[in-house]
Length: 422
Image (tube, helix red, strand yellow):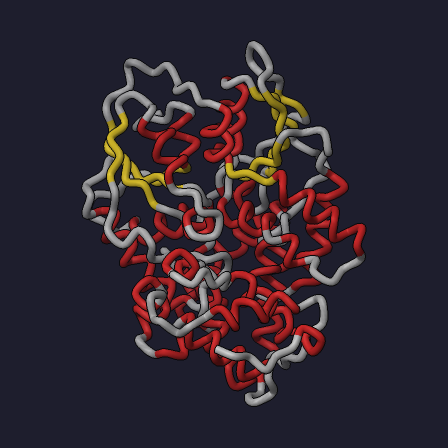
């Protein structure tokens, strides 16, 4: 494809959009792995269709408002990147395009209110807790509200675990082999603080000192995902100051957060040189907890009395597709005595969570969630494991009505010796 878009026209902030547009040859290998194409069945809701629409819009042939619905339908799962033989970096196009489009978009009052609620609650654990309590009161009327607001209430947990505080430093057990800083996340702090605790347990047991920066905040991935780049940049800058430089890695236990932080180079494209360099340096240190443990060496927990368990592993999209991490979690799980690893069908298809997608597009998200749970349950597991809090809650939500409900845990919990009934 020969594009008439020039980098000068786009400017340094959005220049990265040109390369993926020109790289796409419209071969169609992305179609079977795209969740919206597989559920909606039309070209404009496929990766190559969206690339063509974005190209036409950036060349001034189509008004941005005409393609907004198709861009909004995209989950940003990046399964198309994994399946693309031409190496099209779709992630370097969809996020910047959403930011570009948002600068000129006119949203209705309900849309503005929904985005405001998302950006002001999910990235703030205390607000998220308060909002969840309020939502639990309104669950009976959720079906009668506008879809997106009804979905927010329906998906809100009825009960949250007790708030957990973390120490600023957790010393390594035995000889120190490394020093890392842990991103504890936003919604995850409220929904499942036990995940971060399990990560700390596993890291320290393996000789890694863990620093938990007290002034850290949201990584900005949610804002980035919906095109709110200013909010995303503000969140990222806060963490640049909060996280120490003298660590070997910045550890994330959430695939979405890890992927977003690795995209800071794109987020700060065209920014002041000093902050752009700071963003690149920060991103270079970001590692998923399983990838880090696999690289430094992992000693499985001593849990000889634990019964054998069958574990269905779900590939979080922003771990498998965005970060290209599939083997590390599997190697670690298989090293734990008693674990039998099960592989579900359609591993590459998104579960429908995708940041705030299951709130903004509840119908498609439900279809994908049920499809994912069906494939996972078909393996007849004792437990389901994944590396992302969004996937975990989505799968848990759509499996609650199963004949035989199965626990859903984070991979690192199994590495910490999780067993049924523990």
